[in-house]
Image: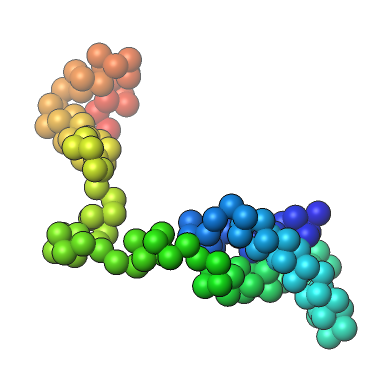
Length: 138
């Protein structure tokens, strides 16, 4: 069971930049890395009864190395570079704004909260089925 978990740990990091065949190789090698690392932990007398360190640390380290070995160049380059427009906007905003022109959910939610607070009477909340006590919390 731990070998399967180790395979998943190893592929988690590079999953966005590798091909499916490479993901299988990375997962299989991660299982082997786990087997070697728990034997090393036993030899070094590291107290880890469920082998959590051997399952997560060493296969995760292998996954980081494997991302450099098996990365799909076009996908990796796309992740590393932004356009001039995205750089001007700010990478955080460029990555999290929707691309299809839909208003972000947070803006919709904040608008609903502000309309509710501005009404004062709680009428919009009562229309949605809320009681008077829950509608006047603000």
